[in-house]
Length: 224
Image (cartoon, rainbow, N blue to C red; front, top):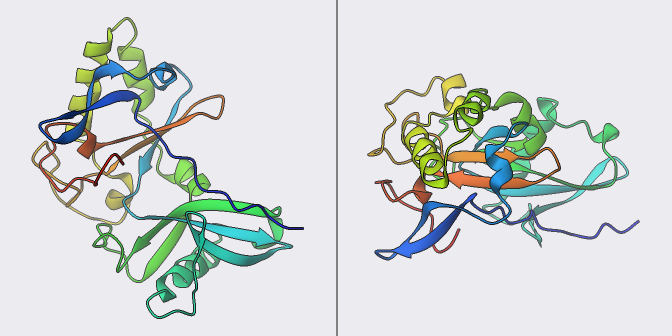
């Protein structure tokens, strides 16, 4: 059975974004259709700073690795890291191919040769998003949602902005990475890249520290 290749849906910010002083940043307005981010039942998961990779599974075997919709030629020089990362995920039992239905499964590839390896791990590792939801959930977000009840858009924005100034990485802490986190910190040290929000009805949104105007590090390019 042929599997229709698909890309990971583009995730948007729960706050509106505008170009201010040449930088595409969040403003104190909740984007249409994203008020659910600030309601009960949302799961807040650390967004890792890596490369989005999917595996294409058929009859219990991986038949393709993809970056977006593009098939990765693992035999091409320089592409070994993609296969190594997925193989490590299998060794750690992050995925069990015999249990997977035919289809595409998405995750984040991190490690050496990827985004300067902020997690300080050897070689590479592919982490399925389902594993991240289990291992890198920000439990404090439930309390934040409770505190924001009755707040207006501007108050919610300021609350979230202040949290993101000091947003530390769960994954880095697990790996023993040290460092302060504040508005002058980029993605180095113990800083997190951001949060992916999962709604009760399957919705998703993302918010990165570099989406705020106070961010002092290197930003993602364009309208990412």
